[in-house]
Image 1 (tube, rainbow, N blue to C red):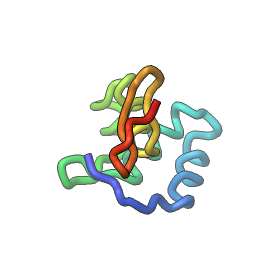
Image 2: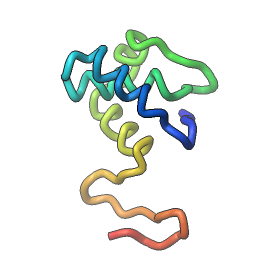
Image 3: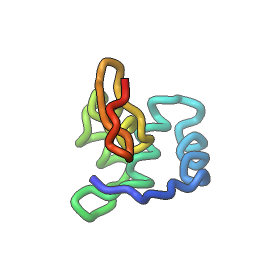
Image 4: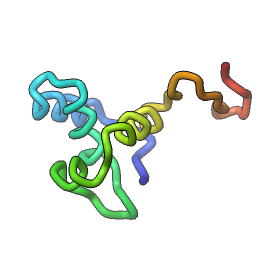
Length: 82
């Protein structure tokens, strides 16, 4: 999965409108609008069918630059974050 370094705010706004205020639905909509999967764009329906809910949460965290609770990672300079 790949995504642009700059994430336009307009894509998030479109995802929230399409999801009608449902946060999980917004994530399910945002990721296929923003990301490419093996170089190809997936439709929202394909994404929902192929990607389990637990994976959506993890992928959303990766795209937004966060870590899941209990995970340790490194920031851009290579320092371990706690």
